[in-house]
Length: 280
Image 1 (cartoon, rainbow, N blue to C red):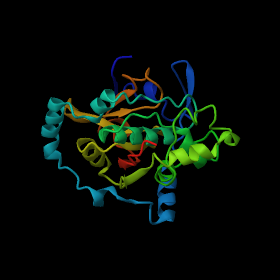
Image 2 (cartoon, rainbow, N blue to C red):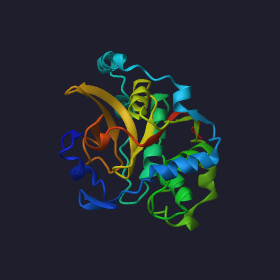
Image 3 (cartoon, rainbow, N blue to C red):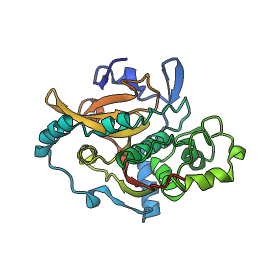
Image 4 (cartoon, rainbow, N blue to C red):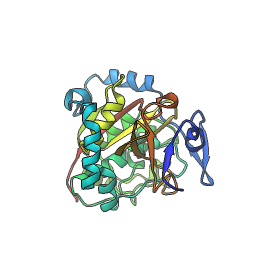
């Protein structure tokens, strides 16, 4: 498939939005991101999120009148996170039909955070955080809970815990738990809901802060913007899905601000600025 731009005309064809299950590339995909109102209620219940601060208070938004110049600068020096991913061979993950999109977007952001920091690429396991969050059931969840697991417990390698293991908790080995402590998120931020969500996404991508974002209209969670552009008098962000390399261009696709359901503006998200650098 050539590079994919989601538009009002093709958004249903390429996202399956409004459906619980979506058939893509010969396989069934489950769309199970948690509704935003439940995300907000869970966040309020925690009151003091783990090791994190609201995004708007942590990082001032980059003014819109700077965006075009910043896009040109990052295009010129090749410093987009998409380029960093490709240079570090950070792969496009594939949730393989499981309803763990919440874990895949989060772990994908963690792997990109390692690449931005110049750490070796390690294929981390979304199942090792999605399994505990979902109590080993094949279902959606609050993506913030996946982030909490990544902060408190970390993620082990995918060869230790993969889709074949994730629904069988008796396969969980204490050794994997010990190993996961070496791959924890140590500095994270929440996107603050409101009318500045797209600005937060753009600020994160300009500053090379990887994120996981979700969309209520789609019912899906993906890795947040890894590049941006200005085209057709609109700002576009390049996100990455977790449906394998056949989706878009090696998993990457473009979303514009505005359009049907304001499709490029996420309903919620979090950013991972620092991962623990240990390699043990």
